[in-house]
Length: 59
Image (cartoon, rainbow, N blue to C red; front, side, top):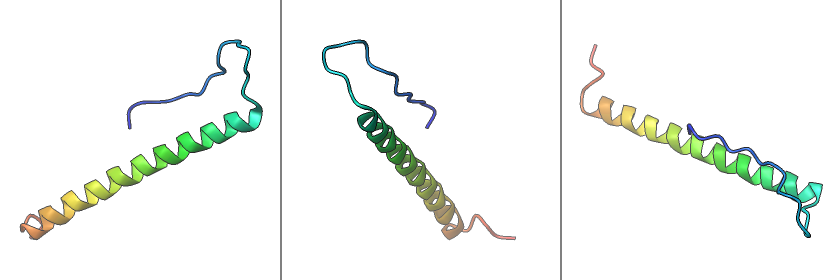
């Protein structure tokens, strides 16, 4: 998750996005980033569970 995405206004063109479209795109990006973070978290949990299952957490 080292990449940062920033939505910037597109260059001036004949077709402009309205503000709602920009907000919707930003919301979609945020949801994708949250999903990526959750997947990374679940992956880390799985590695920890494997480590424990293999006896790596003995006291």
